Length: 323
Ligand SMILES: Cc1ncc(COP(=O)(O)O)c(C=O)c1O
Image (cartoon, rainbow, N blue to C red):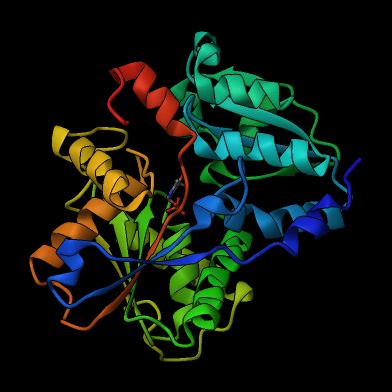
């Protein structure tokens, strides 16, 4: 049964906005704040909660009892949907690209523990087939099923991410000069940008290589006009900037410099970062600060989009890198 815990949880927002004193930023006269969305929920954390919130409400409104979605074997999104289903009373089904043997990894193990029904398909199928075609191919009954895209990137996700801006504005009493977030599908950056009305800059740090995310963000903003009002001729789209130089080799690739930074940042500030998303974003912000990219006196809000569940799988694959 879809239960009313969803309403109770909705009332627990907002996430903390933490002022962080970090030498590299202080030296440049920058004011650093971290929007701790990683603390929103123990398992549906970060931008996953933001992106799922309005989707869960819509699923409930439509009377759906199952959430179906798609992802890789280490997907934060799959883990979050599994946890959200368990917490809020939906059955969940996850279509996973790759081998069934990956079910032993911490992410899929967690999804299974939450009761997610896992089905496997080839990476080529996942890449080439539409969501509906995949569900048909796997003979999945979609009655009363709410289908979420891979990475949770739809218009309702953008609507949830707008709330990062609204909350921050209420917490600070003004909008910062920059919002900075990691970019995978671009939905979080698009949602933030859509709420800014050109008043702050929105920087996205691409965690994948290929240089396609700037276009993706613009596409999302253009395809979701019903989620928000973009006043004619304003600078919304131009104020989202995706930086492509900080992926450290590509998705889930890493460099020793990145790992050292993540470990040092935690030691200095107590804030844990993951190596796939937030580590790369904070690393980039730190580098940009050092290069004088941000004018002195700028106020920066770095959005901690969670992803910490991925650290166990990362350490399992590569040795205990993240402390
Ligand atoms: C922890 C974390 N941060 C950031 C992102 C990137 O967000 P988006 O896909 O909305 O660009 C993701 C992936 O969705 C994620 O799992």
